[in-house]
Image (cartoon, helix red, strand yellow):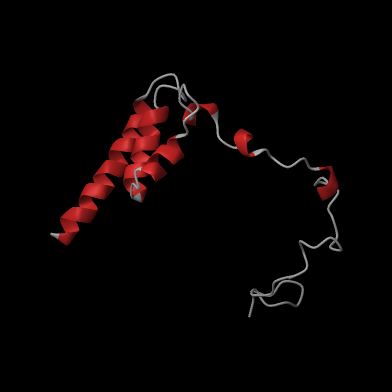
Length: 107
């Protein structure tokens, strides 16, 4: 088998690699120096409306299926993320088509 790395199978996994006693690379910061991200900082501004409503929470409130929720989030951010809305609206259109195809396959 040519897939062995340093005498280990390609399926070998170091279970302790993320534990505190694991070796830390000098390229990565030590975990105690990393500031946890605040919940409110995780959502980009282009996903928030004027009153602070988040696109994902609006979609969750309406129990939208994946493709419809994705289309709605693209539409809601379309005039806020890029200079023109074309990229976001094109992606929204694709997800609407995916949802339509799903129902056409059932018919």
